[in-house]
Image 1 (cartoon, rainbow over the protein chains, first blue to last red):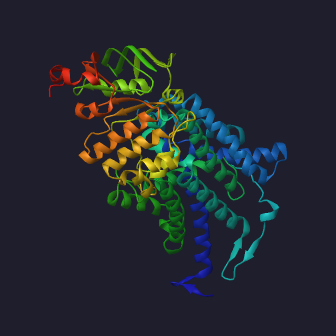
Image 2: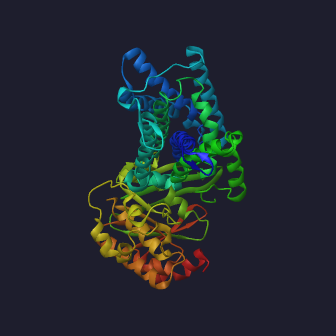
Length: 295
Length: 230
C-alpha cells in the first residue's frame, strides 16, 4: 500500500471523494442562495427545507407513482420550484420594502413549518431510496474503488453549476438578471417585467436546491433533517465565498468540501469545525468574502 | 405627442411637483430648464413611472399613462437616459446596449448605432463602467435608440463632460431629431440647449412658469437670466 504524507492512499482518496460529494451539495445549495440573495436581497433560510423537499418529492414519486430516479431528477425540481414560485408570490414578495431581517425571519419560519410537517408525517428516522440500476456498483480506479453513484453526483453537480454560471454570465437573460441585481428600477424602465423576473429567480434557486435533494436521496436516507444538516455549513460557505457571488459560491462549495474531507484524514477531531474556522479567518481578513466585492 | 397636465409627484413624504403643465409635439426637441431642485429630473422620472406617487395626467398620443408601471410605460414607447447614466458595471458594452427591450419597430439597428457612435464598437467587450464619462453618456443614449421608442427623455446628457464631447452630443441629438425621434431634454446649460431645441420650458418650485420659443431666446435673455440666476 503506498502512502501520501504518511497516510494510506486509499484513506486519503476516500476522504477526498467524500469531501467532493459534500462539496457538490454545498456548491448546489450555496449557488441557489447566491442567486436568490443577488436578486431578492433575501437570505433564504428555507433553502435546506426545500432541498429536503426535493428528496421527499422524488421519494414520493417512486413510492406512490412508481416514477423512478431519472424522471424525478427533472420533475422534482420543477415541482419544488413551482412551490417556490408560490411562496414568493404569496408571501416573500410583501417583504421587499422592509428590512432584510424580515425575509430571513419569514423563510426561517417557512423552513420550520416544512420540516415540522415532514417530521410529523414521516418521522425522523428516514426512508431509503435505492440507487438507480444504471449507477450501482463501483469501478476500480487502480488507487481506489469509486462507487459509480458518488462519481455521478460530483459530475452532475459540476455540470449543473457550470450551466447555471454560463446562463448567468453569457446569455442575454443572464445579463438582464445581473443588471436587475444592480439597479432593478432602471431595468424595469427599460421594459423588463422585473417582478416576474424576481419570481422566476426565486423559483430557479429553489429548483437548484431540490435538484441537490434528489441527488442526495440515494446517499443519505430521505429524512426531514437532511436539509438542516447541510444548511448551517452552506451559510458558512456563502459567507466565505462572498454574498451573492455566483462563481464564488461554486468554487468555495467544492473547495470547502475538500478541505473538510482532508481534515478528516489529518485531524478528524476538527473536521466538523474546520469550515467555521475558515469562515472566521476569512471574515477577519476579507469581510466581503473571497469572491465578494466590498460595498 | 406628450401632454402633461396638473402633474403632482412625491418622493416619500416630500411633495416635489405641484401641478406641472407642458406638452411636446411629435418630432420636437423640447427642454426643461431651471435651477437645481426645480423639479426637472422628477418630471422626467414621473413620466417614466420611476417616482413613488404621482397624480394628474400624462398622455402619450392621447393615452393616459400616469398610472402605469414603468415597464408598461416603456412598452408604450418612451425611453429614458437617466442623469446618472445608469451604465451597468456587471455588463459589457454590448450587453448594456442590448439590455433595453425593443418595444416597437423603427429603432436603430446595431450597425446604425455603431456608425453614429464608432467608439462603442471599438469597446464592445469592455466593462460598461470602464468607459470614459463621454463614452458612457454615448452608450446611455445609444441603447435607447435601439428600442423603437419614439419619445426619448434625456436627463442632463452634457453634465460634467468636455466641450468637444458636448458638441458631439449636440450633433447626436440633431441627428436623432432628423430621424423623427421626439426628445424631451433636461438641461442646466441653456447655451447648449439653444443649439438643439425648438422650445424651452422654464421650471421653478415644481411648476412650469414659462415657455420660450428657441427663435425668441435672444430677445428673452434678460428674463432667462432672472429665472436661472446665471
